[in-house]
Length: 217
Image 1 (cartoon, rainbow, N blue to C red):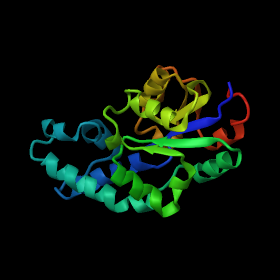
Image 2: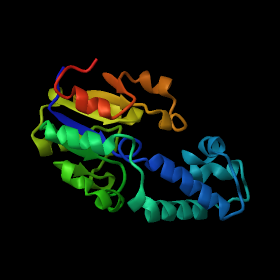
Image 3: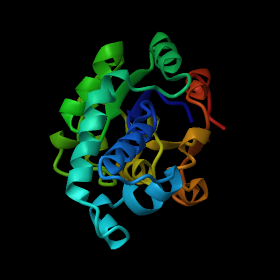
């Protein structure tokens, strides 16, 4: 099925913010004298930082999170994009594919992240996490975007790295595309993500520009 609009997720899809948060946690932990491997942080800290005292009772999780958040905020302007992200956005724009962005990050953070490369110019609609009542996996951010664009869900593709993108996209009636680059393997179980039934899966963003005018496999 062809698509004429794409709604992108931001974190873990265009911007390598998952990696930035990981570095932030390393900094927050180091400030309290802790050194952990990436896998340890993922297992103990990343998804539930406030519960980390179950494993490390001497750790102040609130201070760790504040230090982590400050690190993320201070480094957003220089955040890395996934390989081919800018090339893909430019290619899709040249093909006349209308694009939008949906993120769970607050507006303040997404504006800071997009500004240095003027990425906002590619998106006809941007909805941040603090601009909706319900976040993904609720479909509200996507249905609001569809309304903003006057878009037909059936010819709209949602691209994201997480099960919440797939679940919300299906609820909104769109096509869904799971992004599974090797860099994200630390953060996601790709087999578990596939169980949510995305319509398409890509390992590189450049696949999108090449397939925008024809059926995705």
